[in-house]
Image 1 (cartoon, one colour):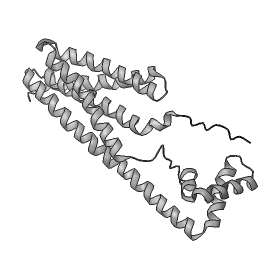
Image 2: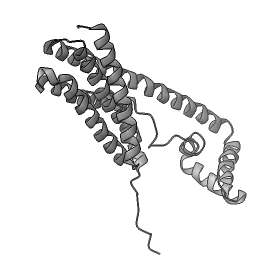
Image 3: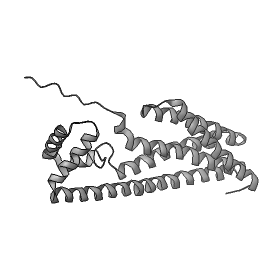
Image 4: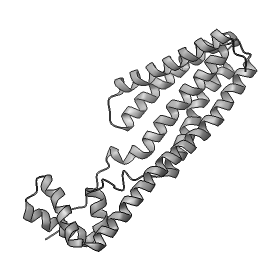
Length: 233
């Protein structure tokens, strides 16, 4: 009897690791750099001071995002490894009990007890630790923590997001820097919301409203502080 053709579907969950880090990085790059530029511009600073503040924000923000993401995801990875080590010990100490435990998860999902035990035995015969990691701990190839990938994606996306308001501050007439950066940042955030929503297979309107609302709040607050204190950097 001929074997059915292999069929591997590509699901959007496979993107969750780099997508989360990239969207967060780009959003933070736009919001923090634009807010910094707007705040300094509102304080009546010159173009050179505005650009210096924006460039410093870009570099510092990218490094901070990379370091923060790496530390955060590394903590998740350490937890996953600890759980897998403990699970491997349990499998070695009492494999029969682990078969029953795995079968219990399948029974909870609607499989008949006898069949569930048979499935559990076959799954563990092929890859016992992999079966428990996936069905007991919720760790899979798709969701496993990747610290370096997350750090790189965050730093790169932050830098790309920060370049946009910085370029506008460089090219716009001095009298229009504050308004031009604000409008461009909101438009960029709206575009980012659409891109992130489509990449994740979600609706775009909610994402657009969410990112533009908080971006506008951040720029309004920093502009108010800059104008109130007349900060010159």
